Length: 344
Image: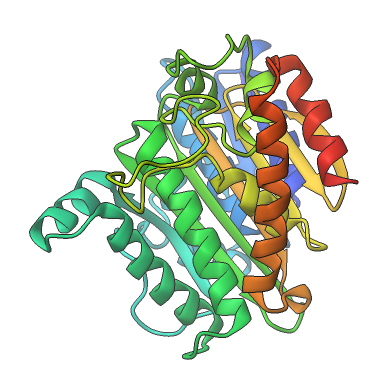
């Protein structure tokens, strides 16, 4: 039985909707799903990564055929970004295995090898955090075509560094899938990072000093709280002098979601649940994902001096972290704690 699904665009909401549509077709017994891209207009980094990752994963289902139709001139951007090849179709460019070296306003699907990052650190007698920091600085400058350490470059560097570190330190994934786009005329930058690791729920439950977390929704709300980490004992107040500068402190997701909240858009999903913040409004989403995906949409015109902004967010985070150390917070209460603190 053949079914055709017409893809009109691959923005945030439609990407999630089309994945659900495809799953429904599979459950209904479809053996051949044709993806019709002939009317597709807009495709954005989240759609490029999330949708293609799902198509690649279901292409392994025995007895299921996935095909597509398209008009060549209308999908040139998607072809160049590695979208079709990442789906598993023999169309367009392959995903990259390294970041661009020349200034560009976009980063096609780039799949980094975590083992190579670690080996590079060993070979250069550095910590992997230093390697990620260097990649993040160069990537932020290339994406914005800004050579100096401007507030925008500093902001993107910080976000790149924290979300890539989060994958390397927590996910157990062997690969990191990355995609980004900067629209100077719109004053927006979108960053998407995906891994196919253990997921946030399993990662946090490895930390025996945390309360037992029951599902993906609880895990996401808990993970966004400051000082919550799979690696750091819960309620630990400070690092010892012997601990590395790069040792995880549980502030990465908290800080990046606050930065994206400067008029922007933050989304993180793991397993079957996604959580989205748009300014101070939070919504929940059902997803289909092995591992974790994170999306930052930053309103670049709202970026001022990052140092001052980070200081305010950090002080807020420390204040909330101190509250957490004084109570036995349950995962089900994490959402309320986070919302009250962010919207105060």
